[in-house]
Image (tube, rainbow, N blue to C red; front, top):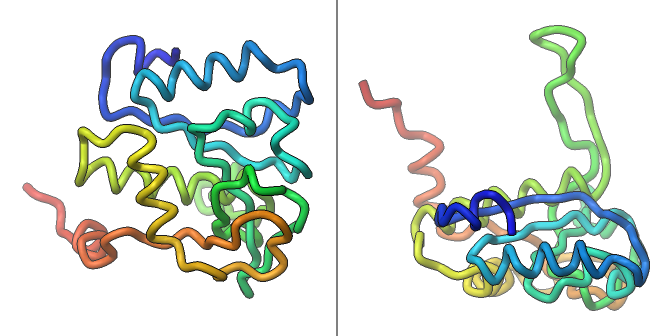
Length: 178
């Protein structure tokens, strides 16, 4: 289990990039599965890997596995397979650079898409703090528009969508309390 779930902190969430181990990642699968059973929502980058069902920890059933799309909602690659949970924006994502306080960079890939899903999961947990990981995953899936992704191949063509967008606007636009 992760430190959060072992310590009993709830709600809890974790994000991770791909370990990328084919077949031999039973220990990683067990650790991620234990975190999920302990109440931690686990969001994983698909890692650009084809046929996710063969890789650890992406094959862990309770995890939310995220692939990336470009600005036209086209999948970065079409061969993830049905193990992928959904897609999120992951191409040309702006981030803070390290060259100076105002430096920026642009990055691509599933590792840039997964944090969007983790953020939506966290916002859901803020409104539903007792929700179990399966409920959070189901909420993200049910809110995702069907057929929202072009070139998804055998993966579900679900594009991450903000759950309860009016309350999200309220959260983002609220003035800090003094």
